[in-house]
Image 1 (cartoon, rainbow, N blue to C red):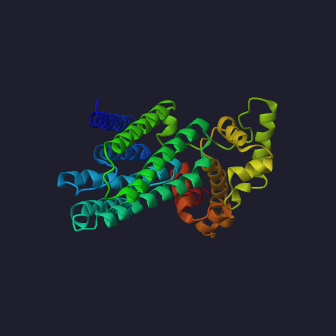
Image 2 (image 1 turned 60 degrees about the vertical axis):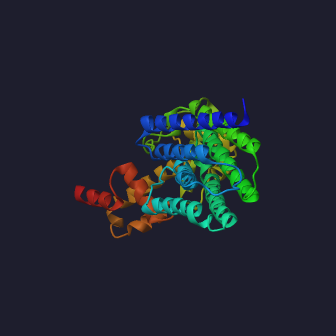
Image 3 (image 1 turned 90 degrees about the vertical axis):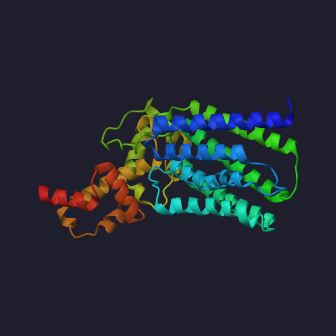
Length: 353
C-alpha cells in the first residue's frame, strides 16, 4: 500500500469513527449540553481529519477553505466542551457562539484572502496562536475543575479526553507554525493521520468503558437530602469518618470557607483525597464535590429565607453568609434544588405563615 493510500485510509477511519461518535452522543444524550458539545467537537474533528496537512507550501483551494475554517473554529467548541464536561452549572451564552463565528470567519478569510495576498506565514501563525490560546484556556479550566468529580473512573476518562485532544492539537499548532511554507512530504502527513486515528480510537474506547449516564448525566445531579442519619459506609471506620465529616459541615459549617477544596477537607479529616472522594460518593450518594457543598449551603440559605426575623436581610447577604461567592451561582443552584428562586421561596414561606 502506498503512503497516499495509507494516509487516506487513516483519514477515512478517523472521519467514520468521529461521525459514529457524534451520532451516538446525539442519539443517547441529545438533551445534555456536554454531549451536544461533544458531538459538535467530533464533527469539527472530522472536518480536521479530512482537511489537515502538515506544512503549507501552496495556496488553499477555495473548496477546501470551509473545511479548514470549521476545523479551526472547532478549538472554540473544544474549550466549551471542556467547560461543560467539568462544570455542571455551565450554560451556553450568545457570546460563545459569537466567539466561534469570529474564529471560524478569521480562518476562512485567512485561507482565501490573507494568505493569497503574500502573508502565508502571518496567517498560519495567527490562526495557530488562537488555537494554542484556547487549548491553554481548556487546560486551565480542567485543572481548576476536575478534582470536584467524585467518580474515579469518570474522572480518569474525562481527563484523558481533554489531555489527548489538547496534546494533539497543541503539537499540531506548534508544528504548523514551525514548518509553514515547507513541503514536509507524504511521510509526515501519513504519520499525522495515523496518530489522529489512534487518538480517536483510544478516546472512543475509553468512553465505552464508562457508563454513558455517568459521563454525561441526563440532568443536574439531584442533591441527596441532608439527614441526621446518613448512609453507612462499608465498615465502622468509614462510618466514623462520615460522622466526622458531617460534624464539620453541621457544627463548624466549613462549607462557608472561601475556596474550600476536597484537599482542605481531607486534610481536616487526616485522610487521603481519594478516600474522601469515595466516602462522599459511595457513602453519601454525591457525584460532584461542589454539589455536596452547595447542598449544605442551600439548606442554610433556606432556613434563613424562611426565618421571619431575617425578612429584611437582602438575598445576596444570605447567599454570601451561606458560602456562595456571588449571587448568580447562588440563584442557579438554589433554583436547581428547590424549583424556585430565593425570592420566590421567601415569598412562599411568608405567605404560608
